[in-house]
Length: 242
View 1 (cartoon, rainbow, N blue to C red):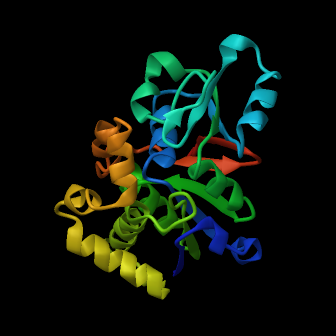
View 2: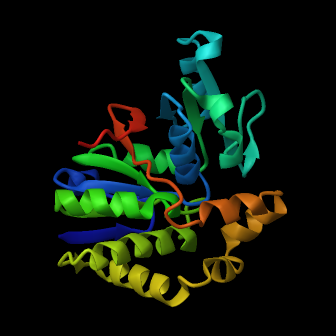
View 3: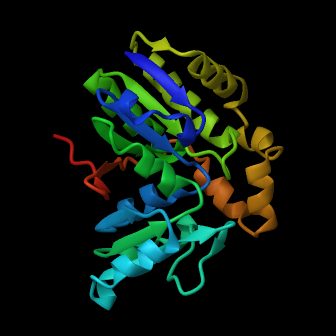
């Protein structure tokens, strides 16, 4: 299995994804929120680039059938139902409903991956489930990190490292690019205390200043959920596995 890691969506050439499974990772917080929403019975999540796109699409739904979710600069968008905090996507709020989501980093990364053979949404929350699935497929993988405001983000890199570590533990022969090796080494070094290293990062500090420290603690929990979101034809739903 060949593994390539993209530190930012802007580094991705769509044609490189044609014959690969893409795993999009935005640990803080879009991936984690999507995983949580679908685990809690959300019908589907539609990732959108901008606010206007989300509002326009919402006009196609009956009011009780959808929720507008997302953030700009870590804060809830004015007029939206939900922010990007996974704690807001509880079963009583999202079950059976469509979430129209736009975020600063994550939803853009998902859309960028659309040319891949299959697009999976991953994070620390579902490391084991995603690794098991892509390991069984045994196809080349592209890990696409969302980054933060167009810059490299360590939380995503550590999550990629956790998935590569899980694949190695399954006995998979892996051919990694240099960034894949860095991800694995970073995770191996810091896996006993992820929070300690993340406390020094820009994205962590930004979320704490915005009042979302508990979100970070939630999002870095390893293997909390078995849910695998898959992005197909513009919509994210729970992957149905045999």
